[in-house]
Image (cartoon, rainbow, N blue to C red):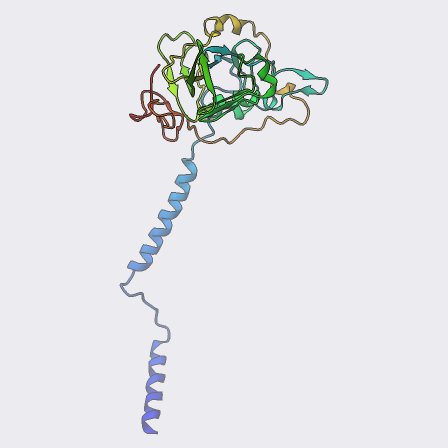
Length: 300
């Protein structure tokens, strides 16, 4: 029992001796200093991230801009342009809701009229696909489809409105030839060079300058695509466009809501292989000619 009593007294003395003493971390003040430093650095990174966030895209075109681009579809060996004025309306307002959302349209004149109503068609959202959506034209890497409303004006023999690689055959001068899709873009309607050829992700090709020209082509691989027929007349045709509908004219119930669209994936192409994707920017997947890999880009 003496041993037990001695142990108890020793424990009591140690407990009494420890009262009022501060607890110290092993290593002195190093650990709490490290914790404080991590906290300060973390807080600083949060503040920096918030302050350095990029502002909303304010690059052209803007809502107040009034741009025009020449365009055309080159189908095997025949030029075609879309019919219908997207600004048409009835007593209730605009008939075309995609036009009401973006403001992008044509006037049966071979021009794309870029009068953006909202962020859905400004800055990096100013892409070829925005225009095609207004007229319900579907364009993928391998297939071009026109809606029924446009098929009456298509070249003879293609009234089904579908131009698909591996399926649709071009008949040129009585000879059947396989066709493939590509888009050629010129920075200006008066350019005399071959433009930039794209072979993929066509809808994301950016229209970021006034007066550009674009040709959507389904042709044999060795075909050189020229400027659209409307290109030489662009200045005169643009002058005929004296009126511009504004967002205030939208029919009730249609909101011009900015679109948080995907990043620009258009990349010019080196058309040695139809499925290759040109690349000229960070996320640009449509394919510009000069900057694409060896098997993607091709200048016309």
